[in-house]
Length: 158
Ligand SMILES: Cc1cc2nc3c(=O)[nH]c(=O)nc-3n(C[C@H](O)[C@H](O)[C@H](O)COP(=O)(O)O)c2cc1C
Image (cartoon, rainbow, N blue to C red; front, side):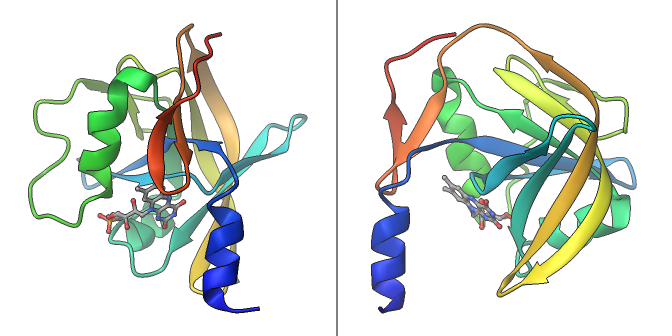
């Protein structure tokens, strides 16, 4: 198999979209991520896979906290903003509050998991950050989906 075969299979896996945030020196930082999964319910633990090239990578490692913000269908623009490598500050004009760990919780997200960093594992080009969830919140709405390299409306609500 080739790397393109691998990508072709992964494009067939439908996911939600999150923005993983952290806070360092009182400066909020975040990036768009879909390599997110539940690990354990009791105790509540989750994982995110972060490219070691990402600017967020050393910040999460240093802050030892992060928040996974699950986006609604209406937040596609945020997903695009936090996925670009531009120099503009994606937190400008964005409403958020500081969660229990100190990581930013974005307003109006479908759900969030505020985590203390528990474990780090290197795998290929990425680091798997495992977090213990110390606080969470949720509301009803429709999720932003991602499938075949594009944002999608999965036509469902909770
Ligand atoms: C839908 C989508 C999902 C993504 N998922 C991840 C991910 O799980 N892990 C990751 O490291 N990058 C992921 N990326 C890429 C980052 O969002 C992107 O590289 C971002 O610019 C990194 O920002 P930073 O360098 O400011 O930290 C994803 C991008 C998109 C559009």
